[in-house]
Image (tube, rainbow, N blue to C red):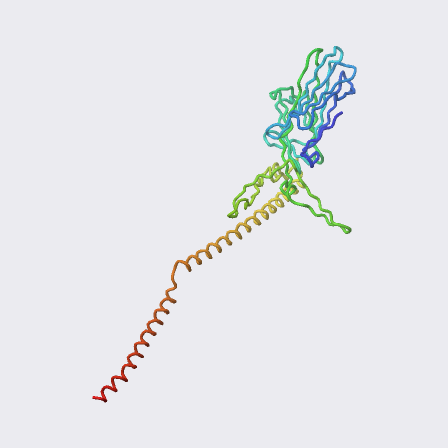
Length: 346
């Protein structure tokens, strides 16, 4: 039995996990990994074989453009006796998942037997993450022969499916399904950019939380006169899926407590986003006010240089006229004394 977990780096099995079990001719057999792809290989692959037989399996895992994973098995049989195979898989979807069909209808509680499995599409909305599952022969490989979804009223759902078929000697068969697309309901922007501080009685622990797989979409706008003076405005996903409130319900088979928790989380997330945008708005308004003051001061300086002060100039002209008139009066008074002396001599 092999266990596979699905999730971005640092978040464990956020998208769930899967158990695989292989039986040959009705019994479990030892299996060994003969080779395995290196990190970063697309697709990732594992070459497995059954000791003392001519049986082998190639398992491929490919991340697709829509952020889903294609899981494919190629069984090669070179053995004349071991021809009957059963590959059983159990998938535990994201935590506290609510399962809906392709049309968005909630899956009934209890064991849901899907027959035939091919053409089945399911969506799983969890507390922290979402995923989907597609079983379809049209994807280019055989869909499972049986499919059962255990959807309890309370507790973690499970998706169980298997392939049971005969592979004659000298032939091969390709099986598979599609898991995803994946999406997170966590506030990844906060997990990426902020630092959590946890205070204890003895000490303070600083923990940096980073998700190296996620880069928040943003808009960079110029906020100053110089190069590099920019403000990054994050673009948050606030649709129903981004807020984690898709497929909410208060009536059975929904779980009211889970719906209320989803609503509380959405309200808190929106409040946090509004706080971030409010801080950015205050910052831009402060910058705008500073630019307005600078423009006003510059205009006043230009006016002082370009335009004359008329009041000051009129004062200077009046002063000059008074001085001139006073001088003329004093000169006239000075000329009167010689004229009076000349009159006496006559």
